[in-house]
Length: 236
Image 1 (cartoon, rainbow, N blue to C red):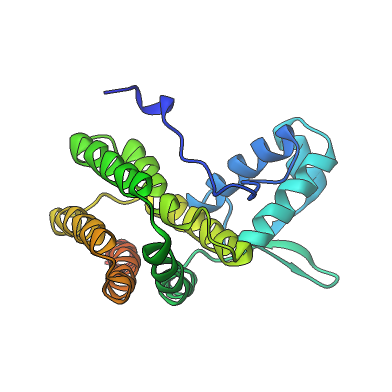
Image 2 (image 1 turned 90 degrees about the horizontal axis):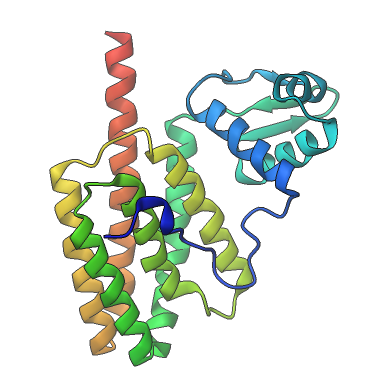
């Protein structure tokens, strides 16, 4: 098996994963991680000069990073109050995955009607790598799983929908890194991927769309369950 960091999922063609300078992109990753891990508290004010000083950079890359985080929903901007950390709470995660439940079935239905033999072969190849990894390396699983779904959406004519899918998936991926997959969720992912490939092969567009809706909702609910359990443990 290749080393984990040798595999990196890429966004659908034509979609810039960040749209920032290299320094702005690097700061985006650092600040996003601080928000997700709670090192930057919910509703905490984000002062550009303070962040630049903390990270040893100028203010322009910080502004770039904050605009990227605003686009993903991690940061809010209020008139005369500047940038603040958006609470990464259960409502935030619910809103993100519910959007996926709405748009991914449409993207999937289109894909099934357009899928080539090469597309199916690539899905099967990626699924083979997912099962070979068998969740042993969670980072590698995340990258392979994202690549699997990207195969289905990368050529869709509606680039706005594809970009929205990518950005929201990246948000959920970032949040879900804090949690391990349960055995039940692992089994569901493998089973649903196999069923999805079978529907693509058979040209069952409606069945595939219904399956992807359940698949996305299952992933979102899995994250929410972990968040609720963590909140209960902290409260107890």
